[in-house]
Length: 83
Image 1 (spheres, rainbow, N blue to C red):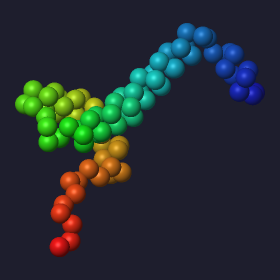
Image 2: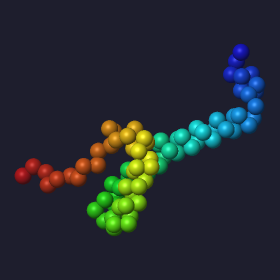
Image 3: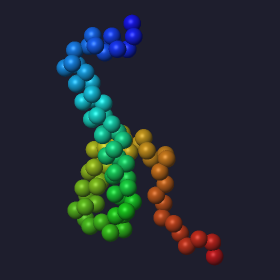
Image 4: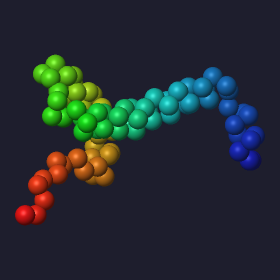
């Protein structure tokens, strides 16, 4: 059985549900956490109280995706360098 016959045997509604799950999972685990990481990096020293509270809430909400990218991203502030 080849892939074409396998896909044609699955009902279209099921394929749409699978596609929706893949898109929402990709947004939840990849797109939003990366956007949130870069938003925090660019605004960290200029955030107000309400914005910081909202960002912390989003970090809590998208924690699984944040954990996926945390080992690969380094947002430490650069120091003065060697004197």
